[in-house]
Length: 267
Image: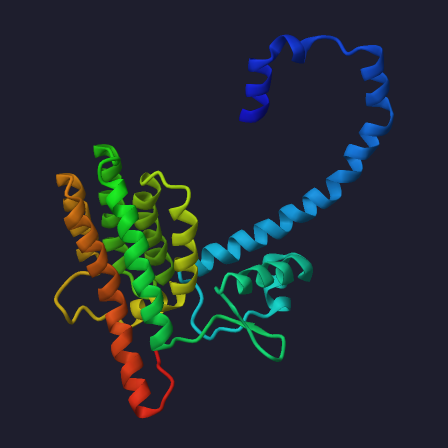
């Protein structure tokens, strides 16, 4: 709608003038048929994109468990679509390393390994730390208070048992509100890719969080907010690093214990 309105506003005289004979003939002839025939593949691409966006968003928010199988028929039935857009969406997510293709042509969420966890965590701290640094001078007071509102909602969600989906959504909303404020079109897709790969880790670490360190689940989020209020980029990036490390340290301990015992890590 905005694009169409902008076009009329910018070129109103041209847009409103009567069509000439050649233009009226063209509208009645080939181009109309050509445009109509092009609508089908556009709609098909739209459905593929919708399925991809939905699965991608769910992975980023940690809605799927590590090792969970992604069955095309089950997903298609759940999303009330054909198998084709699901198949193509899964293929794209495999290419992005968010999912793993198995020899039997099945697709699953990657398993948890210490090597993969450390690799993703290291990249997240580097890239997301830079996004926070860039965002600090750009965030307004109102935007910072919106981050505080998200965190209060996150705290409320923590009181509800088995409400992982809501907590994951608040966590995602908090972080990406900061990252978008950085104003970098290059960093955001890189961060999204890292979250795609770390989603299962975040879900697993959230499931074993027990508060044994005496800190609330949102402790480092509040530390980030206080640093943002002061305009302290160094403190904000340090709090972000602690937030990422704290979540993943719980899982590191489980993975190390499982490795020593020869068992698969359990959430």
